[in-house]
Image (cartoon, rainbow, N blue to C red; front, side, top):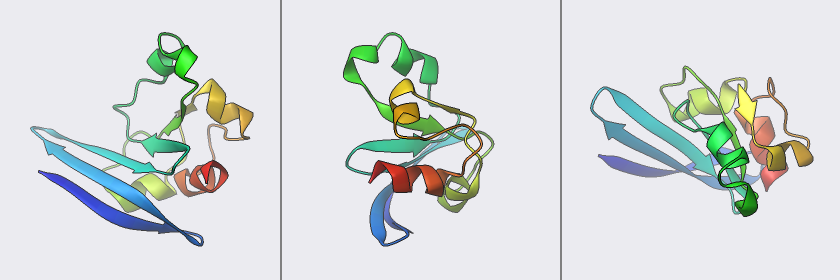
Amino acid sequence: MVTLEPVQVGDYVLVGVEVKLPKTTLLSISTSRGYIMCGALDIGLLNNTLSDRQIIAARAVGVRTLPQLLAAPLESVTIEAEKLGIVPGMTGAEALLLMV
């Protein structure tokens, strides 16, 4: 089951996606520039193999819902996200506000 839902962050309405899979759920919230995602996101792949794409993204681990993804501290971020001032430890919501 795939669910799309609006997610309010500050003055912005962003796109939340929840994909229910066997034994796991994938979560992401995106802006027009980048996104945050659950622990399934491979930051190393984005920074290394796909570096030419300059993807702005961040990962939070141990989250099970979109509200948790917003509130959780980020575990890792891409190089391109760092260029915007997004760093591990900030919340998903804080990172998204820097991506809009």
